[in-house]
Amino acid sequence: MSRKPTVCHVITRLELGGAQQNTLYTCEHLDRARFAVQLVSGPGGLLDDDARAIGDLTYEQCPWLHRPVHPWRDALAWRDLVRRLRRLAPDIVHTHSSKAGILGRLAARCAGVPRVVHSVHGWGFTPNQAPAVRRAYVLAERFAARVTDRFIAVSQANVEAGVAERIAPRERFTVIHSGIEIARFRRAVEAGEGAALRREIGVPEGAPLVGMVACLKPQKLPVDFVRVAARVAGEIGEVHFLLAGDGVLRGEVERAVAEAGLGGRFRLLGWRRDTERVVAALDVLVLTSRHEGLPRVVPEAMAAGRPVVATAVDGTPEAVRPGETGFLCAPGDVAGLAADVVRLLRDAALRARFGETARRRVGAWDIDAMVRAQERLYEQLPAGRPRNDRS
Image (cartoon, rainbow, N blue to C red; front, top):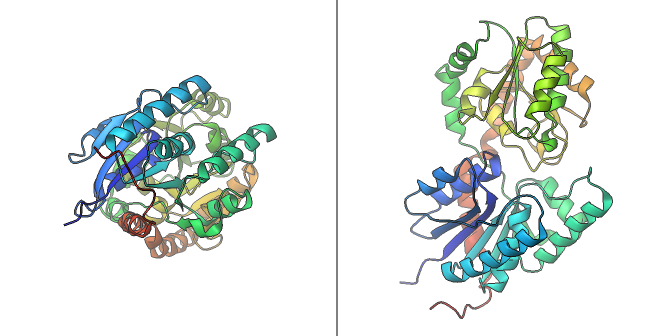
């Protein structure tokens, strides 16, 4: 019997985010009859212990692998990854995120790994970067693409951006949506877990509740959500708000809440592992991002039957159908986002219709289908470069 191939996933840090959670789910649920699985990440993530708890997963940490660009530390991370991959000797390296994607793919080539796959959870280059910075990211992606056999994109928008920037030709991309555990979110609604969460955080019974689930970092524009909340509160007096997540902009969010006079009606929940309860508690989910891959919380809201009001960036329009499952606005359009939220809060029948349509369409984001699609891609990879250091 031939030896089953080993897949090594490499990710910058196991923080509480969609790319990280889906990577861990993949590592745990890849068919062990067909693949052995390894994982390498940088240290200090909230999900590190989750990785260690996967019994048949070989999990290691690269101490130099961190998100900020730091030439000297990045060189040490690359050297560490080369040595580590030579020792682990995987047949396939599958990288995630920009930092691990660049360093991990180049290290895999130097370590003699036969096949290399990269998942695009949103590109590192964005429209709001300084031109020189954006150009540097694009050039780095083009360079790493030379040693990449296949790209997985979580949205078609990511494919189009990669092709437009001449990172790789279209035929080297495969779209595999970022999956969710659909049944978990449906069970939360059926079990009344949303109502229970409302009681826990002190939302009055029957009060409308609008929320956002996001890391508090510049990409997500969380202060815009506070501004949306202030406008909505000016129209609907009894409405309450929640923001689940944490990050570098927490202080700015807290100041914006205080300045808007929303202190009694705005709850900052911090990091939450029970997002199924959070979205089940909402009447409307809002997402104010300036760029995305495809935000996992959008299909989570769809599975719970909740309408979404979001910015029309990258992969989000592939999930949110305006006038059918929610509404879309341009990034920074606080007035437009607020008006759409008010419209939904004032029309229960519209919310119900959007929610039912979303439930019917969410099947494309099934997380087990995501894993099976990755397995098929692994098996369809070309034979790759022969390894000569198996000893």
